[in-house]
Amino acid sequence: LFRCLCSNSFSRPSYTPSRISDPSYVRIFDTTLRDGEQSPGATMTSQEKIAIARQLSRLGVDIIEAGFPASSPDDLDAVRSIALDVGKVSVGEDGHIPVICGLARCDKRDIDMAWEAVRHAKWPRVHTFIATSEIHMEHKLRKTKEEVVRIATDMVAYARSLGCSDVEFSPEDAGRSDRKFLYHILEEVIKAGATTVNIPDTVGYNFPSEFGSLIADIKANTRGIENVIISTHCQNDLGLASANTLAGSNAGARQLEVTVNGIGERAGNASLEEVVMAIKCRKDLIGGLHTGVNAKHIVMTSKMVAEYSGLHVQPHKAIVGANAFAHESGIHQDGMLKFKGTYEIIAPEDIGLIRANDSGIVLGKLSGRHALKTQLSELGYNVKGKELDDVFKRFKEIAEKKKHISDEDIEALIVDEIFQP
Ligand code: KIV
Image (cartoon, rainbow, N blue to C red; front, side, top):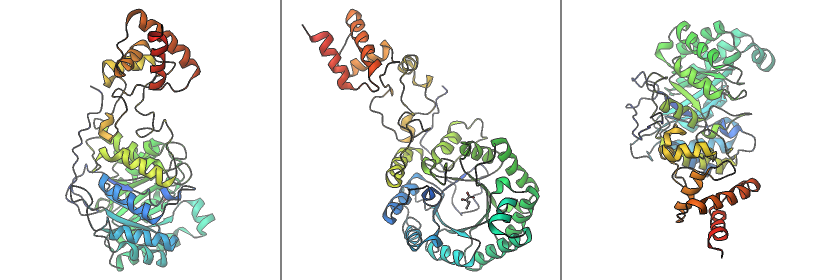
C-alpha cells in the first residue's frame, strides 16, 4: 500500500516558458550540462552533450541549461548546437520542446555570447547572475550594494533589449545574503524585465527549514514577485540539497534547478531523480505538486550521464544507485518475497529499471532460507526438507567468505551437496 504507485502518465500544461498557468506545476530546470559539467573531471564533448540534451528532452525536463557560452568557444558551440537541435525539434512522443538556457555573468560580453548561442531555440533563455552576500560583494566583486543592484538591473534590461523575452536572474550566494537586500535587488530586476528569479544556496549552507523560510519570505516581501517564477538552486555541501529544494517548492518555488545523479561543483547539486521521485512519491506531503518528467527514462538518463561524465554513481545512491532496489538481509528478503511494498516505496519499473530477478534479492551472508529457496527455484532446482537444510548450511559458510554470491556459486553448491554421490 505504501509503495509509490507512480503511474507513468504525466502531464504538462501547454507551454509558454515562464508562465504555465497551473499553480501546482513545478518546472524542472536541468543544469547537468552547465553546473554538472563544473564537477572536477566531468568535461564532456559536444557530441556527448547533444546526446544528453536529447535524453533530457525525452525525460521531459522543462528547461535545459546547456552551458556557459562565454566560458569557451567549445561551450558556445555546444550550446548553439543544442539550441538548433533539441531546442527546435521535439524528440519525445508528446511534442515537447524544452527551453534552452545559457548562463552569463552580469556582463555585456557574456550576455551577448549566451544570447548568440540560445537565440536559435524555439524557447531561448538567458540566465544572468551576480553575487549578493556581503562576503562575495566585499572580497570577490569588491563592489557596494548599490553598484551590484545597478549592474544587475542594467544587465537584465540589456538581455531583454537584445530580444530575449525570457531572462532569469540569480543573486549568487542568496543563502548567505541579507534578506532585505535580496527583496530589494529582486524587486529591481523584476522591474528591469526578469521573468524567473532563482535563489541559489551556492555553498550548500542552509538547513531545509531555513531555506524554506527564505523562499516564503521572498514571496511575501518582494513587490512584483507574483509576476515571475521563483526558482531554487541548492548545492550539496552539507548533503541537504534535495531536502532544501523540496522545502523551497513547499514554500512556493515553481522551478527547481537540479542535475542528473546530483553532479556539480564540489559536493554537487540537488539530484533530479531524488527531487522528482520525492514529489511523485509524497504527493500527500507536497500539496499536489507535479512535474512534467516522464520517470521511466530516469535510469537510462542516469547511466548516460555517468558514462559520459566519467562520474560513477555510488552503489547506495538514492533512486539510481546499483543497490537502491537490492535486498540482502534475510528479514527484508522474506518481506519482499511476501509483498514488495514491505521494503520498496517505488516500483523499479516506474523509473525504467529492469532487475535481473524480479524481487531484487541479492544473496549474501545475511540472507535467509526463504531467499535461498526462491533463488534455487528460479534456477530450476526444487530443493526442500533436509536437502535444503544442508545446502543452506553450506551456503552460509561460503557467504561468510564471499561478498557476492552469484548464480554460478549457487549451482556449484547444488552439484556439491545434492548431486555428488
Ligand atoms: O551555485 C550558484 O550560485 C550558481 C548560480 C550561477 C545559479 O550556479
